[in-house]
Length: 198
Image (cartoon, rainbow, N blue to C red):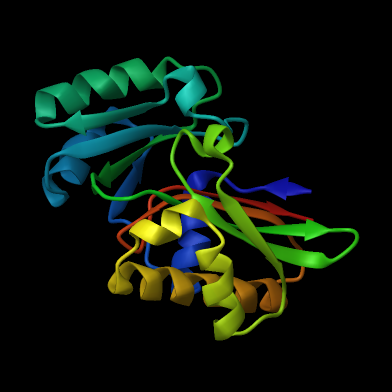
């Protein structure tokens, strides 16, 4: 079993033609200024490391960074967290947060998940599942099984539909994927991802 860091997971998904938020991964403070200058404020800064799974629970995500001085202080603070290998700096995007994922099960093989994303995912439990492979019609049914579907406009529905179908193809192309979590997806961009290989 191999767990990819957020950087590795997002780089992999980008190569597979998924839309990933604009970002920089840095390990040294000397790299910070260059990264910040290439992204627009406000920014999000997050810890990254092989052993780090729930970044929120350890205070490993800081949002709404509006200037370089704050970014510098945040870098120092995040660097002190245990098991940190580097810092991910991202452009902050606002919008509805969605969860997308793949899970390989003993009974059904790869299963795709879609639902409400963000930090309240486990509390809301608003998620629908489908066994791969399935078509566009089944994708629409899957989306409509969730409570968040009633608030989706046509454009958002199409973006989610496209991403779900891409995940289905990805599971077929890479049968060794044991788990893949995208949480959240905002405005069609992957903001955070985790992949476990079998």
